Length: 426
Picture 1 (cartoon, one colour):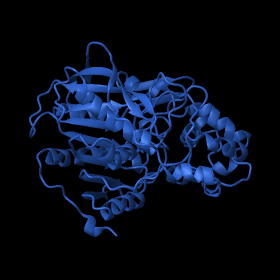
Picture 2 (picture 1 turned 90 degrees about the horizontal axis):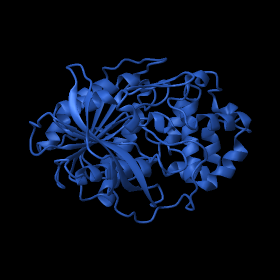
Picture 3 (picture 1 turned 60 degrees about the vertical axis):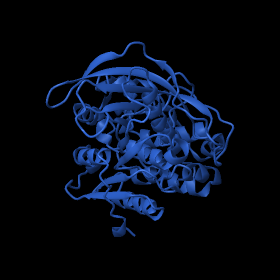
Picture 4 (picture 1 turned 180 degrees about the vertical axis):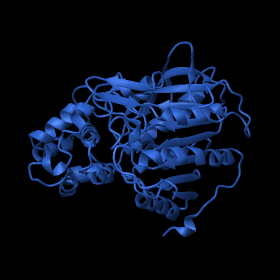
C-alpha cells in the first residue's frame, strides 16, 4: 500500500474510492459463492464530449483526452451495479509493438468519500478536506509515464457515487470486477480509437495490487474475451485480515482498518450483529467517524487508539475477534487472494523490506499461483531500504516498481515469452 499517497501514509496507498456518507448498504446474500455474474462493461454514461487535460510530469505535461464514464459491473455477490471510471487517451503516438494498448489501472486507497476518488483526484492531484486531511495523488506519476509512452489508460473508482452505502474497501471480487469491466467499457467507448481486440495490460500497486491480482484471478471466467497480455501486481495486499494484522498498533492506520470493517458490514449483513456486540463505544465511534473521510483525517487519526484491542468489548485484537466468529471469518476469507491461478502472465513485485504488504505474503501468493500452473515472475527488490515512520518502505517501493514494470509490459505487448521463476518458489 503506498500509504505515502495520502495523509494517513502510515497505512495503505494509491488512489481510490468512493461514496461513503452515511449508512451501510444492505444485501440479502451471505458469505457464500456468488451466482454467475452478468457481463458488465456497458456504458451507462460517458461525460459528454471528451475533456482535454494535461497530466503533469518531470519532462513537462502530457496532453490527454479525458472522459468520465459510468459503466455496469457486479458486486461481490454477483448482483449488478454501476461503477464510475475515467478514460484517458494520450495525444502521444504509440510507437511500441502492435496497436495502441489499454492499461486498466487499479489505484490504491484514498478513503471512503467520493471527494477523494480517482475521478475527483485526477483533476486536482492534491485534496484538502477540513479540518486537517490532505490527500496527494501519487498514482498520477504512473499514469503520466503510461500516457507519455502513448498507452491509453482507464482508471476505475471501484464504486458508483450515485448508489447508497460505503465503499467496500479491499473487497476482492468487487475490485476485480470493477477493473475488468473498466477495460470492457473503455474498449466500447465511441471514439476511443481502441478496437474490441486491443491488447490490455492490468496494472496496480498496494490496494491496486490487490485489485489487479483479483482481476487476474477472475478474468478467465468473468471476462475471457479481453486480450489481457499481462498483469502487474505491485506490493499487493493479500487480504484484509492480513492488512489488519500488519497495521494493528501502527500510528495513523485506525481509519483504514475502520474502512475495512465498514465495507464488510455493508456487504455481509450477517456480520453486523457480531460487530455490534464485539465493538465497544470507542470502536464504534472510530468506524462511524471514518466513513466519508479522505486519507483518514489527520486531525483525529493520530489521537485515536491504534491498538484494536482497545476497540473491542473483550479486549482481544480484531484479528482474534474475526477468527472466533464464523460470520466474520467466512466474510474475510472470501477476500483472500491465491485461490485461483491467473491465465495471463503475471509479474509480482515486492520490496523485501516492505513493512505493510510483506514480501513473505507476496511470495506466498506467487507460489500459490505457480502451483496452479500460472506464468509468474516474482520480482524481489532488495534496493529499497527498511524505513519506518511517516514514509515507509512500502510507499517508497512504488517508484522502483513503476520504473521496472515498463520493460516487462512492453515485452508482453511484443509477444516476448513471459519470464517465469516459479522453480525458485516453494
